[in-house]
Amino acid sequence: MRAAAISTPKLDKMPGMFFSANPKELKGTAHSLLDDKMQKRRPKTFGMDMKAYLRSMIPHLESGMKSSKTKDILSAAEVMQWSLSLEKLLANQTGQKVFGSFLKSEFSEENIEFWLACEDYKKTESDLLPCKAEEIYKVFVHSDAAKQINIDFRTRESTAKKIKAPTPTCFDEAQKVIYTLMEKDSYPRFLKSDIYLNLLNGLQANSLK
Image (cartoon, rainbow, N blue to C red; front, top):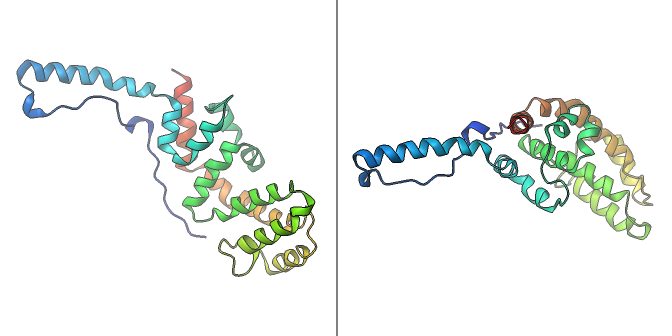
């Protein structure tokens, strides 16, 4: 698994919303007055709507936040719950997206994509199981899969046999292997990552205003 650094903007470096001016056009007192006004306007940026902050920090979240009608802004308490267990994190749709962004930074996003595909597969109508099982197998499980997941040979072979007569549980063994891999490997690093800590700190700071 390759690791890559991810840079996330900090709250105190967010761009301010103020007018710029050409220094050549500013003279004497007028220049001084404009400087004073700009200084007074800067603190207002710290009151920027939290949704806009989240969008600038994690662009991947924007579409998900727009689709939520009842609660489109996270709370610090909600994000803190993610640190209790991987199960808590994956039970939250926004948590899935944030964790997915982190895994993408480590070039291992196929793990959560496979896990989510398995969750969706379990809800599939019986007559559609063969088609969907074949698709998941080709994308994630096959030895030449474009997004091949890291599972052992025995599990890969066992899954290949099960999809010949697909049931809602034919990917359960492989899904469990990937869940355990994320839980023991990626999840602990996620909790220490900038993408998680900056999000949590930003929400906590916003709640104090």
